[in-house]
Length: 226
Image (cartoon, rainbow, N blue to C red; front, side, top):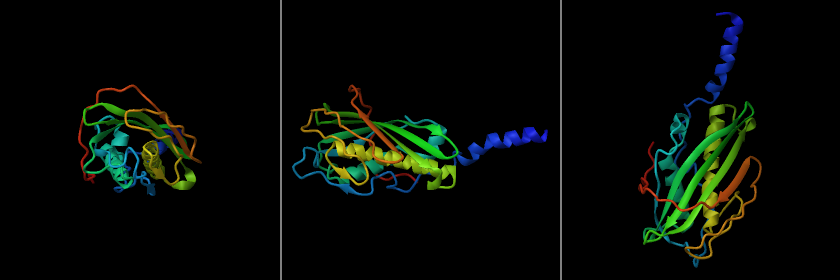
């Protein structure tokens, strides 16, 4: 092979070496906000949710299968809801969280961006949908945050998930440190569009309401697989 062709082949393969599928999922809690303020004792969501469910297999890209776990995301979500005083053993409502997509729309040598879309619904004891929101979050990890591309990919995906959970908590009346404030719900059964503003360097947030759809229930494992 001519030297020029070999050089071009090597350059073409370099992004795969930096952003390969060898990234591993982070430790339990890596997708949960670090500081969570509980909902007020009189909040309509205090102790209201009893379990977290979701559908696996919606993120089927082999790259993300290696470094993102849907059950792991729901495990960190459940932990966050518990810390917020929303998820308790006696709760009568069920929260369903479907990770609809985890994508990397913008990749350069200097930064790695990850966007995550999660559809959240809450159902009361009769099965009626009382909350229905789709949360989209993006996080950009610059070159200065980590030297290796695979590390920036992990950082970006974990923070996109962390901010997604934070926005849901804000919508339910809890608080988190380092995330923008969202709107809340004034009473069960009433859907209100949260108002969200950008939260700082590297972050982008949006929430939108979507029509209700049938939910396929799959109970979340209580222990995150290793």
